[in-house]
View 1: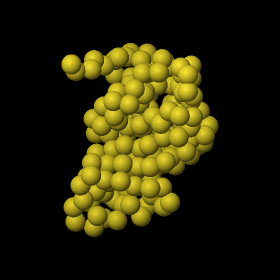
View 2: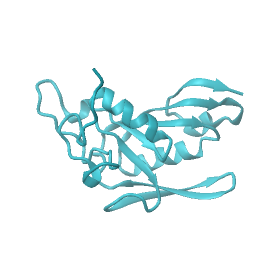
View 3: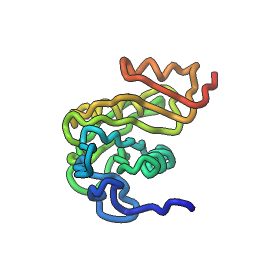
Length: 163
């Protein structure tokens, strides 16, 4: 049978914003089941907006919450932000201040890695919260644009690579 989506983290954490369309579990999960702890949770971090196609699905499969990184002005409550350069201008990403605990491990999820600017900005934003980015993943990587190089020491994985 198909799994139904729950508007709460699979571990019992509260959902950021409190309802449909607010899929991030914040603050970090405090699961009391035997053998589980907040440090064992590895919430996917979905990037606005196509990363939301993969991040929440992955989170549901893992029984975790999904932390959302959004364009400026889209998240409720206090946020932290980072500005970054695009090929055609500037952009800004935000995350809720209480989205993660310091030291919590995360995986950044998006649909495409092109020049790497957005994913690098997401890593910087997570660094402001003192989260540890274990890996960045995307469905597609455009290898000729060398976006992977902008991620520095953060491991990167893509399912499909195109020149």
